[in-house]
Image (tube, rainbow, N blue to C red; front, top):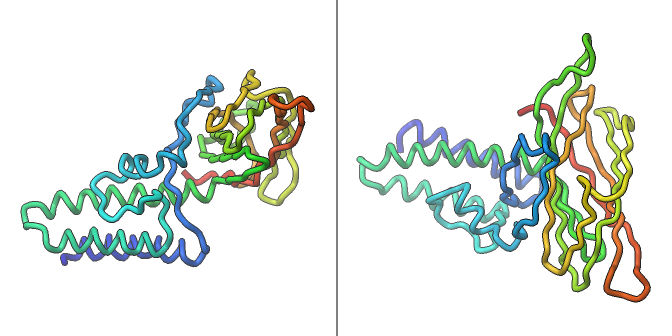
Length: 248
């Protein structure tokens, strides 16, 4: 095994140790569209959990030993790393340059996915799953002498229950790196919509937030309404905190 392959191999295992130390599994996510927030983009999309293995094959092509779930536990990631580097060792010499390029590409993707996981949250309330991932856009002027850090975030609301539910309103709490609440946002619907989610539907939208600090966090809730019962039950679907990190 040449020096470059050894270097990449060790780098992969550093990420594996980070995952194990955090007691986490790595869920592969679709990269964010960093322009979508400009138009408050929204869409009905395929439930990412149901298509995660296809997503893994898209963002990590030609990778061996991908778990059927599309979710990497530390043990599964370790098995995947070893299988792919074992294959590179036995490959013909004329293929090793291409395999090394693939390994560097996979390493970049793994780094991006680990960062996305650090900036994500996932929660389920009464059959409504909310997954949020943030990304840093950059500094933007807010006056002639001041700038703030601009972040975009993608929200996916999935009905994993058996009954229809309508998203009626939202409430967000935005905190800086000291935990101080710097903004609270509340209003009807999201991006001008009050989507009705049937079972297995997934509604996605993009929005943005600004901070003076380089890091912070957001959390909140969506106000939901059950529409297929006589009682028209209302409930809050909680949104677990997710980080805003000005690093990429």
